[in-house]
Image (tube, rainbow, N blue to C red; front, side, top):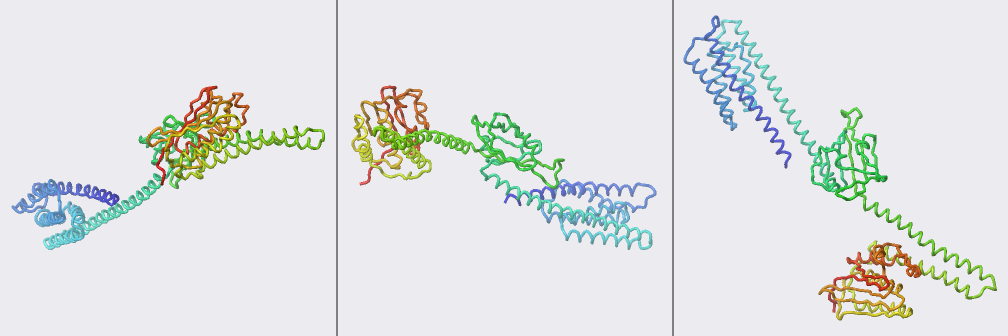
Amino acid sequence: MGEPSQNNDILLEVNVRRAKILRYAGLFLPLLLVAYSVYLQLAPGVRHYPLTPLIVAINAAWVILAFYHFFAPMKTRHGAIARIILFHIIALLYILFVSGFDMPFIYVWSVLFLASAVHAGAGGVKLSLATLFVAASASVIISADNLTRVFQIGLHFAGTLIVACIMNAIVTAQAIDQRELLRSQTEEKLQRDRVLTIVNNLADAILSVDSRGTIQLYNAAALDLLDTNSELTGKKIDTVLTMKDNEGETVKFTQLLHRIHSVRTRDDLSAKISGEVVRLSVVYSPIRSANSTHASGRDGYIIILRDITKQKSLEDERDEFISVVSHELRTPIAIAEGSLSNVQLMMERPDIPQATLHDGVNAAHQQVVFLAKMANDLSTLSRAERGVADTPELIDVAELISELYAEYSPEATEKSLYFDLDLDPQLGAVNESRLYLKELLQNIVTNAIKYTQTGGVTVSVKRSAPRLLTFTVKDTGIGISRSDQQHLFQKFWRSEDYRTRETGGTGLGLYVAHKLAKKLNTTIELKSRLNHGSTFSFSLPSTKRRK
């Protein structure tokens, strides 16, 4: 709806300018005719009519109409038509009784003809032509005895008519051109608005710069990426975005742009935006047009920016994970393979004691169990990352803890450790993924039993708030130093404490527990002192059990 309104405003402005020109013409041209009338009366040797009250009245009418027309602009079409008729009447009287048709200012009638066309349309044009013809015919009748004057009147009539038609044709052509220009501008703006709408709805940041690197156009995503609400138009791209490559060297956008001849893509660049380093994928391309004014044939450049920080972080984490996993798998596989190879060789010799063979098989078995545990941890981690089995369900907390006790009590008894439960009455239920919650508790409990040599492990669930349950696993194990606590939830990390190294482990248990806790929208809290044991706890919202 905005386009027609804007076009109407432009046309109105054009009409106002044209009306203003005609207003000034309506003021000065009648005064010029009055001055010519005075000249005819006063100049010696010039043919003129005797001064009569009618001539005075005609000149007075010119002056009055001129000033009235100038200071009282036309407001309605009917008023404009009435005024055009009045101008024609006075002009006709002026020609017949003051100047004659063969006066030098007869061509001023072309302006009257044009004003008629503008303000009164085709009817005004017909009126003007008819009045001109009447004036010429009357002058011919008056001067019938003077063939020279008749011939001059005919020439003036033809000339005035030709000039009037030419002026009307020019004005008409200009009006057509103006409408066509407005239509073209409207279409161009519509296409531009469509493109801008598409660009502004793209998730990628898009900037258009000229050949000097000055920003000409940008979309909303560019403001989001650059974390700014400031106007970017007119700013240099290098002042808005300072980039660095993987070696930390500053990269100037303008230098990149001036060197390219086709589309280029880079994903090794980063920029510091609002204090954070953002890794970017950058696509940039020259803009070329058939009517380019630049010697290079380029009218600027298009730049597309995408934040790939998360993607790059995931790639780096994946590469690191693969590297660490392959390294961690290499040792147990080598030990198992070596142990089995030795057992295979020893079985061919009858003098090898059975105890030695048993030890070799046992060593290989331990490594296979280690690999199975690592595979289980990796499988749990994979399920958590992919959101497998994350559907929440009502879990009876007391029942879940009882299952946990039944599963790990024998393992604690085998190590001569106590395994106690400390549960509040009427714990109710939690609405969470059973798989995630059970494996989270299992990882913490197995870790506690593993690193506890004397004493035991206590699992407690307490109501810390009306609708909040706190799960706690407390052991009397070797404890964790403050420096090690900072790395405890990192994958494949194991303490340098010799007691930790003596105990087999994948280094994934607590890392998996940390990931599962995040999936459950909770955080594992740790309290530990070296040689005094550790306490792991987390909280979940409770709900009533269904009857």
